[in-house]
Length: 171
Image 1 (cartoon, rainbow, N blue to C red):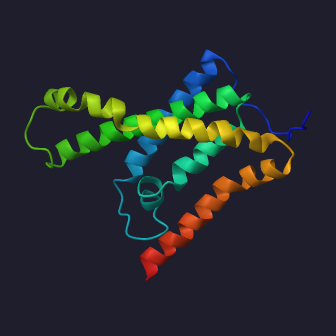
Image 2 (image 1 turned 120 degrees about the vertical axis):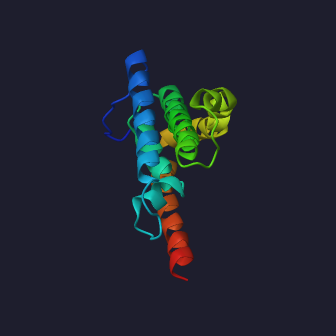
C-alpha cells in the first residue's frame, strides 16, 4: 500500500462538508464579482487575476481537492465548488449589466426569467472538467513520483500563466 502525505482533511464524504464547499463556491463567486468591479489594468490587480485568468479557481480548487478525505469526495467537492463559483459569477454579471445599462430597461424579473437557463448551464462544463481533474489530482496525496508531479501541477500552471500575463501586460 502506498503511503500518503500527512495532509489534514477538512472535507469528508458528508452532507455538511458538501454544503461547506457550496458555501465556499458561492463566496468565491461573490469575491470574483466584487473584485471585477475594480480596474484590471495592471498585472497585480486582483480583478485581473480573479476574473480574467484561470489561476484563482485553479489554485482554490486544488486546495479543496488536497484537503478532501477520499477521491470521490474530492471529485464531488471540486465540481460543486467550480459550479457554484461560475453560477454566482454568471448571476452577478447579468445584474451588473442591468444596473450599468448594458442590457436595457427590462425589469429585473425578466432578466431572471430570460437568463435562468444560462446561469444553470454556465459553469456545468467547467465543473465536470474540474471534477475529472480532481479525480486525477487527488493522487498527489500519495508519496510516489507521480504524486510529486501531480502536486506540482497547480503551482506550475499558475507560474506559467503569470509569465504569459507578464508578457501580455508589459510587451
